Length: 411
Image 1 (cartoon, rainbow, N blue to C red):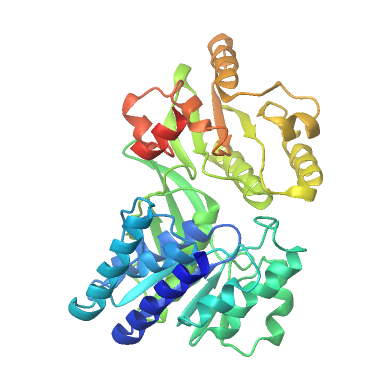
Image 2: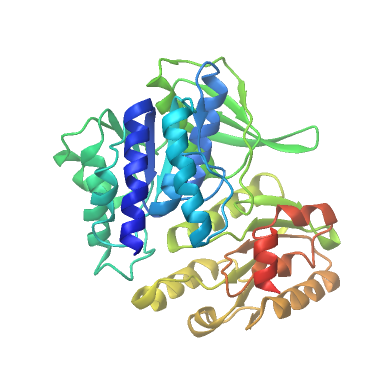
């Protein structure tokens, strides 16, 4: 039944792309897909005002959701009745409605072998982006190499140009065998950055090879994706931007968002997800932010389990602990961190117990802390613990999974 539904919707997708011929930019890999997609979209929209550019504001990256993205559907309640309604709505749009966009930025993460073959029969990307492979969603693959073999199909099918992360072990190694035109981003020393404070806001100054820009967001990985977006922008004949141009971006919630917290400390909210590579990156960014801006603060890490690592869980959690232990102040939650983390402040089974301990720790401490919250999972709901310690009530709406659907599930 599922295959039949996918097939029917794929026909609509194929017809839509064939009729309107938008430029398709397709982002994939394991980590950084959503962040890079949203930054690419926002940069192109800012510097290509004469083009209609679209990406779904939702995290639509499965087969069916990808079709919803192409038809710019943003609200949907899963049910057979609604699915039928949507199918006929898309059919009407295909026949009677006008073109919605000139450029679309899509995201896709595979879960099974041959997923990519199915999608490439529908549309081949004009431009493709590959972020970084990591141990994620590996349960249906025998190895990390098998995921690589599946995803490289998208590179080979790219019509104009592929953009590859040079710091990915597979991409750098195999790029010599690629016949597709490609370019590397995230090269060593590809940009320089510094944080500065302006009107009580922390901003970033970025210097690339050809451009100097200011931006309102933080986090080194975001800077990499801004550089990538500027590379893609050049494919649309925007070769240079004005010196000291400000790139105003909407920072994605739950991905390195700063909140004022209780007792004068500062919270870094990165509770959306966490895989080995992103864990290390977020810790590095927290350290950099402390060293450059919050020099009088101490670091404290509140870490939840990394999920879906399967056989790799033991090794990956121990490697993470070895890195974290240089900073020592660690609070952990759930079973894997309990089993594979050694000496640290405390481990808890529930996030509610963790925040109570943390609240008391900060209340009785004479020091201020820069606190990184990393990881959240549908069975843990880290964000509900964060609510208890946010200084500003209005900040709650910026946490993950706060809509009616999720609040009902949590209750």
